Image 1 (tube, rainbow, N blue to C red):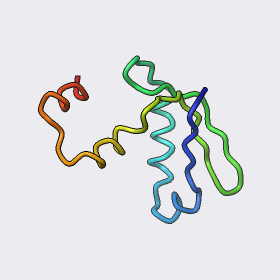
Image 2: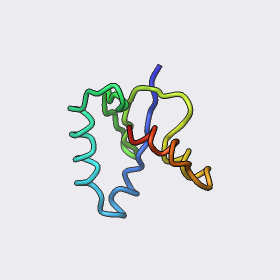
Image 3: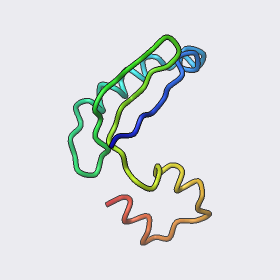
Image 4: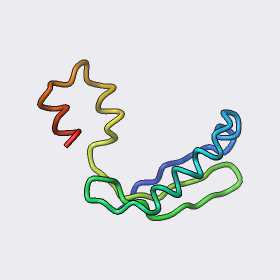
Length: 81
């Protein structure tokens, strides 16, 4: 099972983030650590770029933190560790 992150090419161009996206892909391709989602591949078509990655149940840390009002010190320490 894997997760696919869809990146709309028009948005990348609109916000002038092409070099940032390329850098993210290069970094992800070389990372290999048990606490970092594994990157598998890049696939693209005319409108989108798809980043194929390891599936992690429970959603993203970004979404989790946006849904919480406040993280306890203990909870924050777990994420930082």
